[in-house]
Length: 568
DNA sequence: AAAAAAG
Image (cartoon, rainbow, N blue to C red; front, side):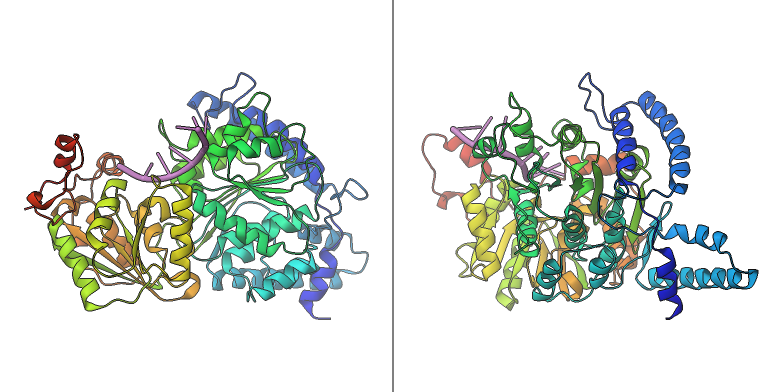
C-alpha cells in the first residue's frame, strides 16, 4: 500500500453532516436574502449587510464547533458516503501507538498536502476557503469516492470524455461535499460538466418529490444546450430532466396538482418567475437542493431591466432547508464576489488561471477599419479572400444585425441572423442549421455571446466593437474551445478609442501582439466605462444601397427612410 | 444595448 492509499484509508470514516448543515443554511438564508415582507432585493442596503455580517460571524464559530463532532449513523450523510479528510488530524492524535508512528503519519500527511498543492499548481487551480476537499484526477474517483452512478460514467466515456478539466477537478468534489461555491474558469473549459456531474451524483436517483436541482441560464439557447447535455449524461439512469419551453403548458405540468415526478429543471429566469407568480404558484421549488446559476455575472446584472431582481425572486422560492447554491462563469465582477462572500454559507471560491482573461487558444487581431463604412468593405474583403466557415459575426444591436444580414444575403454565401426579436422557431432553426453546417456565417447579437458551444467555429468577427472587456472575452470564447485553436478579428474605428486600451490589454495578456501605442492610452474613468456599457457609441446605418434604389414600404416611409441614410 | 413570458 503506497502512502497515498494509506492516507485515504485513514481519512475514511468522518462523515459530513449535511442535515445539520442544511438547517443552519436555512436560518442563514432567511436572515439574508429578503424577508417575509417580500423584500427581494439581493444584497440590498448597506444596513442590512451589516446585520448579515454579524450573523455570519456567529455562524462561523458554530460551524467550526460542529465540524469537530463526528456524526455517525442514519442522519450522518443521508447515504452519500462522503469522506471528510480533515478527520485525519484526529486519527493521528488518537493513535494509541508510540510517537514514532505518529510522526510518520504526520509526514504522510505533509507529503499528501504537497501532492495536492502540486496538482493544483499544475492545473492553475486557485482556491479560497476553509476545509477544501482534494481535487479529483479522474472521473472514476467520482464513482469510487462519491458514488456516481456507473452508467453516468459510461455515458461520459461514450461522449469521449476521458479526464476532468481543471475546473471539474476541483468544483466536482466541492459540490459533492455540499459546499456553496463561486467558480470562475475560462470559456470552453468544461464548466457545464463541472456542475452537471456532481448534481447527478448528489441526487443519486430519481425521486418523486419535485425538482431537486435547478439550473438558471441567461438565454434560452444556453438553457436548451445545458438541458441536452444533462439528457446525454443521465441517459439510462432515469432522472427526469425538464426545460420550460412553453410557460403556459408548464403551468399545468408542474402545478400543485401534478405528480411531482421530476428531478432537474433548466430554465431562463423569466419563465420560471412566470410560473412562480401564478396564484397559486404553478411550480414548487421548496425541494430544491441545488440551485446553480450559470453565467452568474450576467444574471447579477443590475438595473431596472436587469436580471438581478429576477434571480432574487428565484432564490427566495428555493425555500427548502437543504438548498445549496453554486455560481459559475468565465468572468466575475467584484459585485458578485462581494455578494457571495456575504450571503453564501462558508463560501469556497475557485479560480482557474487568472480571472477575467481570454483563452490563449484564440489568435486575436485588432483591425482598424477607419469608418463605419470601412467595416462593410473589410467584411466583404474577408469573404472575397475566402474564409474557413463557420464564422460568427457579432454586432451591437438587433437593428444592426438585420441591416448587416440584408447586406450580406446576396453575396452568395450561406448567411443567417439570430437575435431576440426572431421567433423561437426561427431561433431554433438557425442554431440547428449553424450546428449542422448549413449556415456558414451567422450574424448575431449578444444573445450568442455566452456559453454557447458550437463545435469548431473558425472565426469570430467582432463587426461592432464590444462594449466591455468582459463582453469581448465571452464573444471570442465561442471559438478556441476545449483546447482547440480559434481565431478572432475585431474591427475598430475612431469611435471605439475609449475602450481600445482595456481590450488591447486582454489581447496582450493572452499572448497575442498588440501595438504598443494602444496599451499606452490613458485609462478611462470607470464612470465612463459604465456609461459605455449602457450606451455604446452611436453608429450609422449599415447600408451601401443608394437611397434612390431603396424600395419603400407603405405609408410609413418617412420613418423608414430615416433608417437608410447613406453613410458617406 | 441585449436579454428575459405569452400573446
